[in-house]
Length: 544
Image (cartoon, rainbow, N blue to C red; front, side, top):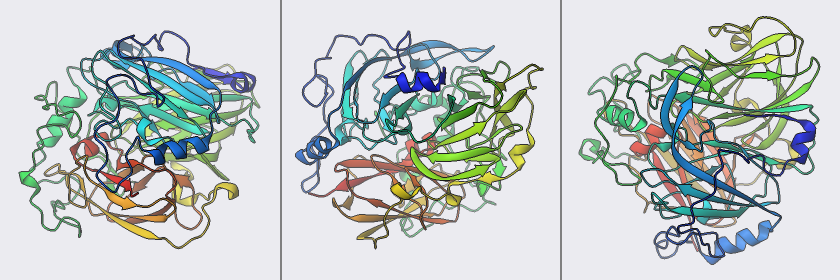
């Protein structure tokens, strides 16, 4: 990732020009007024009584967002050889960059991005965290048809809110390859003052290492552990929770992806099932997958990225966790970080030594940097491995890859300790509707689900435009789940921050509130890519 000076950031329109953003193929690239390409438009219309992704209600909501300057980007998804820093792997990526080159726009712009699919299978783009028009949300078989191999699709939508976002596929386990990139939406009235800005994308990496692929990892996990639910003391929670009703999950067909209908391959490479990964911060079991590498901006700790600044510079750091199965505890050695935003929305500024990011979460911090050389360490929580970058403002030896700055064990800030900044705080209001979501399943059967039901695209939990909706998550499993809602933000309790992704710890309940102000069909799912692909997804549907 590039380092932006404050001046360069303010002057940027889209900082996404280069080898990673290639001209889209011409086949099927003609668009209609909604940005659809020829063969990749809407799927079947929504069931009677529900707003469809391309319906007039969606168009009306988009019109209210306005239509600013159009920022055009061309993006190619393709097979690529990626240098992780001393280790080259074959994977899939946007161009030949890892992460993909960032897309940078200004709030009020219209983004028009054409995706050319040079992969051997269908794909899509989901714009994680954006409140955008529903037919651009990028969920195959729900909001759009898959973008077929050799085809293209033009995403066009108004970008109304500033913040730190990212984009990735919503097709199978493609996200756990190299198919992700940051999307930075600048605030034309930016209230923060800073000299430099760095974007830090964290990722757990397995693809192309000793024959492993995410599809093979999923195939291994789906075999489960029989009666040995790791981290649960032998207790099988597959049928727990009021939503499961004693349902026999063993009869479910787990042989095909919930999106795309492809049969899972036989496992290749060494076993990647992780045993004994525990974390008190995550309530016990930390994760399922034994990743050989953890990356900062596509680099291993053996060859980390170096960020340079002058002593006394005030630096804004935007953290994105693009991992598939790993929470990261992040600290900058020798420094205190001040949290300013989470998931794109401002919070009351809060100092901290360390941050915990679940998959899909983002945090912005500001730091006044000291003189010297310092490690920026991302501990793979509970997995005993780290990712690393280096901050250099002066001379000195680079830190060892095994460095563990003391700040990792200092003050730790989690989302529940933050308060939304006043102007974005959700007004107090009694919910018009409460939807209960029991998170169910176990490692034993690998039958992750919502209310005991594996995802199918025809699921609907009804809401109506204008309602205050409470989502009540009850985690009846022995694992933590970062729950993500498309197209909206919700508020954590008691004036808490506005977020689109929130960690629900095992055995705990989390109630969040949202204003139903963006019509369509919207995914709600665990952002552990393997839990989601095994069934822990469902849909909120706006009723007409």
